[in-house]
Image 1 (tube, one colour):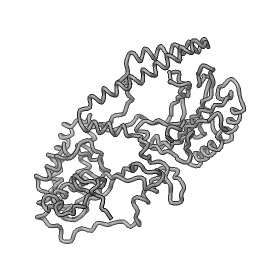
Image 2: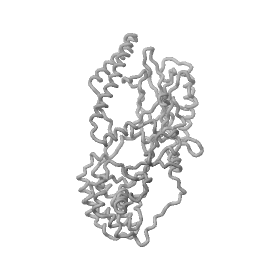
Image 3: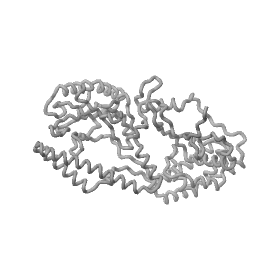
Image 4: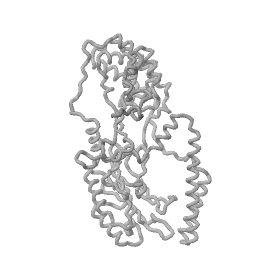
Length: 502
């Protein structure tokens, strides 16, 4: 219910949303403020504000927002529906509300970006310029080409557009679909044929780390050569768009231009009817396109991706923005938020844990049984595709495609890791993904979130081999109590049998 009472929103591209934080202390039904990291060097504040005509100008919000931006040394860009008139932003007349707003802007050193007098509100009762874009002194050099978009917006208000001179390019990534795997395998074969030192003695953790680092660096180097960086581009076509929509849109735009020109009530009525027809046709065509897409879904993996898309932004799940610190204050930056989460979810006394090699070494016969070639090959074959890598950036596909040349080096690394009782240093790092717990009443509480850790895929491979030893050789599942539900197949801590009556 609260969601539908909001009169402002922010819609971001997926890649940009990953580096965006909502500043809760500025948010209300009529305002939303985002802290957005555009690039390594540029972070800015984006705000959307609706100024209700029946309420006073929100001078206090503008003061707090500009003060925060100045304190943090961040550029600020504000889009506002002011419901106020003033010649300073292109309206033909001024009213008391406009004069009050201009005074608030001057008091907070906020700069108007509007140019010209193109109406931003176009309706049957008249035209006006009531929508404005603001920035502070740090944002003046970022904002370029401000303009009122003349395209049909399905609203009485026109879109205000501008460019950001951030000096950034489109998102860059390596696409597995465009990787030349044949070249990758040739490079791996050549690389390892020139470094046949795998069966030399490993006597210390330093020797083990050297072997592991060489393996990871070799795979990364070969992959980067065979899979060059590609830059993301915007899709220029819409899969569900039709010729009928194009024709209807053109007709509606023509009627709108005529109504603007003649100022005739009959022409405005014709335009409104055409706009309603276009809006209904747009929704109908979208719905049909979605049904056609769903009918083509042929496997569980695709269905799971669709379910993930549908649940993106689900209001039953919180988003990681401002959190309450132990003092009760809301955090103001991503660094503060991560600090509160770390202190809450990963408590530590700060004492580093050192690995001590096993005295006398591990049981060689047991290690050889655990790392039999048949088992290691089978474990590698079961590595899932399209899974996120750990901090070492070694993907499962990089392992499986190079398996013929790296299986012996990997077995040797596993063997010496178990023999020494030491985990290679690169496997000790994890990438943490913070996700909200469902249906929590307060998502400013850090305990409403949990952390999923992404470890090295080499580490996961070794863990699978150890699990098989516990399950197949020691028959450990048969020895566990029937009340054990965590980490067991076909068991869940959510099922009724996990509840023990007291």
